[in-house]
Amino acid sequence: MSRALWITGPGRAELRETPAGTGGVGTGEVRARALFGGISRGTEALVLRGGVPESEWERMRAPLQEGDFPWPVKYGYATVARVTEGPDHLVGRIIFALAPHQDILTLPAAMAMPVPERVPPERAVLAANMETALNVVWDAGAGPGDRIVVIGAGAVGALAAWLCAWLPGAEVTLIDVNPDRAALAAALGCRFAAPGDAPDAADIAIHASATAAGLATALGAVGTEGLVVEASWYGTRPVEIVLGGAFHAGRTRIVSSQVGAVAPSRRPRWSRARRLAKALELLADPALDALITGETDFADLATRYAAILEDPGTLCHRVRYPPEGGI
Image (tube, rainbow, N blue to C red; front, side):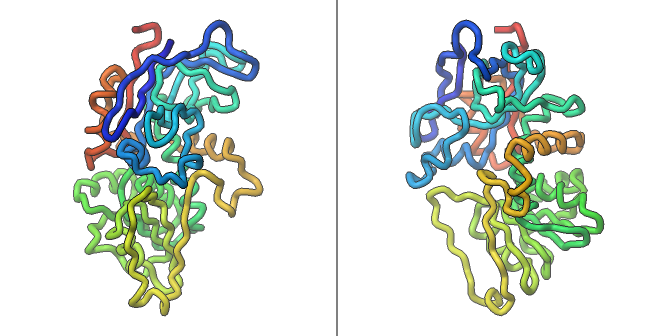
């Protein structure tokens, strides 16, 4: 048996025993022992409060989810583990998997993405967030020299800003209501501004705050025929959007970005596996450790889970599993 975190009701979670498989693994499968996990605050908070719309219950299923929305459900998609059984080329390897919070995993070998040697396992928990940010930047079509604003310095917004900051000559500003995020922006090579000081006449605004106020800031930040990329997901919450003022005269464009499909500009050539592998490669930069804002032992996760998701200071909260060979 293994243990997994289950969301059992609004604001409630518990660790439950769950079968990990007996005997050897099947053809095309691996068994792995979790080392670290990452909590994706935005999406997991929606799941915890029952905010996934019924129309999206199937589309929002995590790859190895058990149970059904709204509850009880075993949910999560950021686990770093060491393969203990399976194909020879994977046994002993550290892998990333879009897997829930669980200590022992049995999963298809195709889902076990090897972590590059130069990426520490502790940082590899950011892979799912990096994959989302990469897709957002592709949807934005950002290029060298662009003036780019990113509204919302959560994990995805911060990673999108970091990716854009690597573009030669790009002017990237990370915007957040929390002034403490200025240090994060500096670590990621970006400028920082409060919403009231957001630049104007930007080429691209990436919105990742999941608030109506943040979306308004994004719309106000772009110049004529500028692009707003909506990377937030609101679940069942209605969002008011003001399309008066200069919106029509400025021919502002709004596009959605969602990680479930590869961005259209890359889709003919990129599989989701290739995208995830690239996201892992991009995590080699030590500056990205600034996105890890806390750590909890797996044994304590159920009791701390709600508080972690409610804390506005949380970017990526890391889960630490017992040492290999430990209990």
